[in-house]
Length: 315
Length: 315
Image 1 (cartoon, chains in turn red, blue):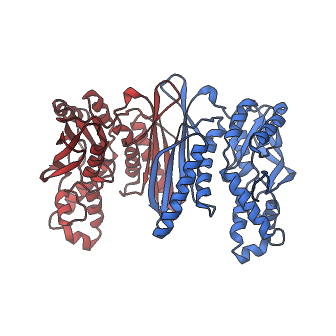
Image 2: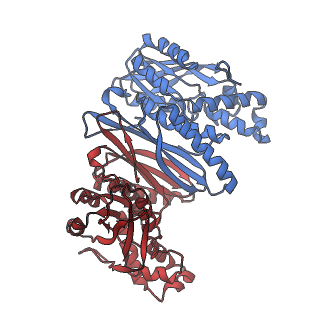
Image 3: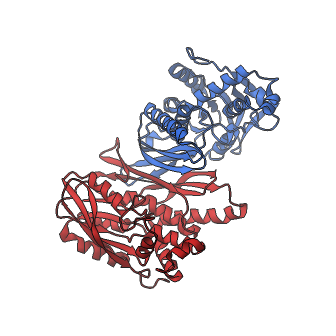
């Protein structure tokens, strides 16, 4: 499960908790803070929990930053984290800050719920379809963006992508990673989701396999479509086996929800999320009879997700 | 407050939470794990909360350890943490592990409580006395123990302390830091404590000042007695202003409870904790009318706390 669920001493309530911290991966401190908070909260949302009661923040200030860098960067990271918590309808009430060689940012998200607020991630049935709520390719985009300043690396991909493409994909990634999976979780209740997980460090297939392995029914997941941030599939291909994006193994940060939904509800789910948030979601596969595994078909269809997706945004 | 208290949506309940992580300070990985867990839990106990519902563990594995070191050291640290959680009647249900230049260990402790389970730390009244439940000097002892292998440093203190004294004080510190403040918290309810905090990084006086500053009544704290692990006051003195132990500013890890108790209950509190746990507690000061500050009198009485305190222990 993405979050721990502890039954409490008090009338049918459970404590749902998760923690996550990592090292900065984008060069905008404020957005990095938002990404860290969205990433922690995502584990609650994957369990169908939409109300986070409290957050704590975990901060490591790099011993290698100058005093000036610290005084500018760390408050921005922390403000981003707090703003994202507010956006999620919760608060940061405490935490811990230490000095550390590497800068770290993360937190703890907790919710006290009735059992009915939870969607246990083990009820997929044959005939369900798989929905994904954010495009893949955040790690590829973040790396490609770093390579704009590394001639050797850039030379490997410059035939398949322009600098402008990379900048757009990078901004799209930041926007995607900082976006909350809260609406996705709310709609999971409305459309009767049978199981869900959020896609992070193990990539789409890694998390799909983990979700499949824990199903009560004898089912397997088959993935046909891979929605990928524009041009990042080409970049990944140009890098050989480095990312394994099309094998579903490229790490994502604060990725989308992977949800098992009744077939007849899935299209409405995707339409609703687009109407509510202005972002697309995709039906990417099916649940069939099987031995609790997940796989991607031989030649999956790559869906190029435009960098400029939301109307009125800058890129 | 030592822990954050968040009112919940459900019938009068509150979520009480705290997090802490730090770098190892003793060379016994298993005991280090226990110390880390006891240290996290201590913030709940300071609020009178005796039932922790869930713990998460935060681990940083040092990138500088060899694979063999990692495979031996990290599982021991984690086992110590988990064993201490079990001792506290709770469980570690999740957490996060990352690679980091420095080894880190810490966690999150959460409890969902009725308001009646909490002792808000702001009700001290004139006439209360101050009780401390663990001796001071853990940082001095840990440092002195490291100096056994540093000739220069050792030369500074060898006139006031023997190697054997240092080893005993170090073991006493480990035992003290790994000891839960749970009984101390339980007895706070039984003997009607008015306010409490746990003594950690800011030292006895630092935490006393913080507690005093947050009182509802116009009170001040005056500290007369300093219980210190045997010989560590002499070591601190020999080091000049380095520790500021007798000024109440030497950092403690997983230190004792500092409690404001009605005068007529304090002796019974100390007797009860000794009977229950086999450890001494001390009346160290008084609460008088004042402007919410804390101070140590000019020549406080130093109480030498023997390294061998518990019957039947090895040192």
